[in-house]
Length: 188
Image (cartoon, rainbow, N blue to C red; front, side, top):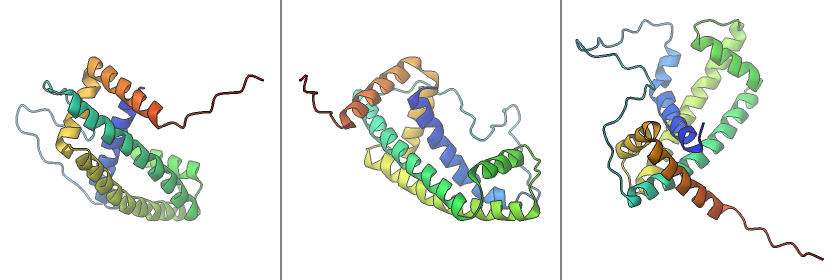
């Protein structure tokens, strides 16, 4: 998977975690989804729909790249923070991931104590994620885009290989420019 697609997935994933966060606490309550409009396909959370043509100029691509790089930096810090939070709460990271995967499949072999600990950790992570979402939205707006426009571009990248290559190229250039330059080796 390409770097840009990973970034897009990360952003969308964080947005979904935050928007669905309250549902994790209330899994035991029945939830009836809104009925789809007749003739309309129900949309699954996180499902990408093929976009209409997105008209972009170089300036907007640069803004997207700026925001995407900052979002990736935020995400990396958040991942470290989540791992630390899990360990601070006394749960092994691998066990946390096992319980999370099992719950997504609707089954778990976790003890009541582990489930209580897991829920406590999830609540803390969701609280952190809310701040993370605001931070990412600020980054997008500081780059000169609206969140809606960023999402439109991110969605378009999923379906437009030419746009994907252009953005990857610009991100590579930018990342190369951010790396510290090594001093030339003395051939002696």
